[in-house]
Length: 256
Length: 316
Image (cartoon, rainbow over all chains, first blue to last red; front, side, top):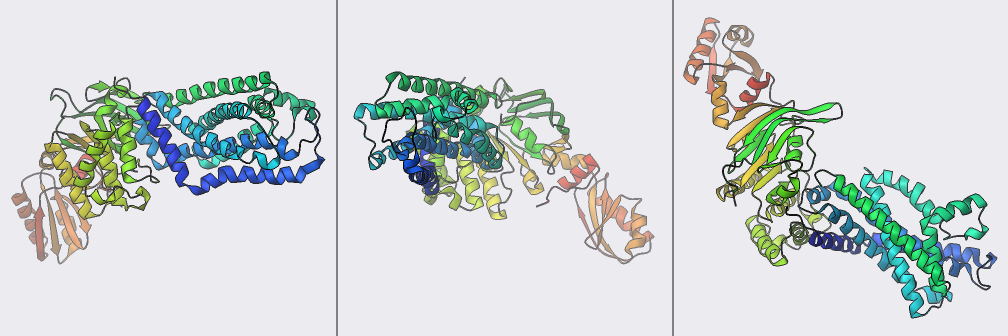
């Protein structure tokens, strides 16, 4: 049985990155929009923000920083997985589906490609941290980058699972607005669990992204290592499960 | 390159396929010997593309058995995919990438080494007249050139069997002719080609044909054998009193009015006898015969004889 695995994974991964970099509007959309949100909302709320448990003197721009990183990851993941629908419509995917490729390779190449983009954009945003007075050492940065990588895989895999089943870009937009965006909204990106209504705090505590965000916040602030590890662990498990689910879905396409 | 000649390129037994309520294929029996250019001819909606998708391992079979290069589907799909080249009707190219990048990714999906990809791409692009287009982004190419890139892509891994779905739809006649000359060259090199088409002139160029209509194979054989099987002839006449002659000719064959002329389709006898019969009927009816031409039956007649309906394949 002649089926290939790593060569297809690498080539689909590379294609994803090359395509993204060639489409400037996508680069701007995935990075620019969250940065504008961050600047506007962050500056708008400004000094009016006081949260229990957050150190005195933390500005909203600083508080919102890790949430913006996650938003960049989410947007990039959405933009890159939407291309599966285009691939299906424009025909590229049918060529991949009849190739002698291991069933997992299609999902893995696509998810790793999208995740690399999300990770890269997230890292770029870290360069803005000093502008709002966020300071962290190398170790804190590496811990945050690790969580960023795990979040990139998890959110891209989530996007993949939805996009694989979507027949139209419009349908995927619906999922984006009803599932993916609320997932981010209820992760503690904009407001902490502590100030939320009790039912919402419960929903937030069931959201895996909440732990990822807590973890990133802890990592950047040099806070509890346990919180950081928990966040990374939850995201790695979510990413693993979702990638496996995506791979099973591609395998469900005929004969795989 | 070619499969052992004991193995059929394609073998279908009682193959059925339905999209919900719509029965696209119902009980297709078909055998394609290796080393041929085999045509699946039929009007749009006749079931060709469904059969193509099954053979290409894109769609999972529902009823009946289908074997490709000796491998039964769907179990055999992973084993047989590396031996197939597939040309889709809507090219499976990444339009945002350059020509060579498309070929590179395709080669990697088929486990080819970068050196082999480089060497094969150079050969194929040169042969297909794309030598100067390596670095062009696919979406900047015309439809005809894109189709050629799609063909280069399918041929890159050196398949034993090339499956093509309407390869010349949307191509102008000159390019169509080039394509068929190229296919003849591939056949000489030992490749089997299965092509779906709704163009009768293309069907004429195939070694063997199966005519698909309403999800069934209504006729199969070489184009020559199929035409001989219909028998008779097609006689076209220009007469003075068409109405009167029309009823008189009704006794000779099936009459229709096409472009101001009367066309009589005779279903038996040879070409010479057919001309005499028609001439005699016109004289008897007392009309003046201004012109008469006799042709052997065409694939259009083969289709009409097999289905009882006129050919409407060339809707484009």
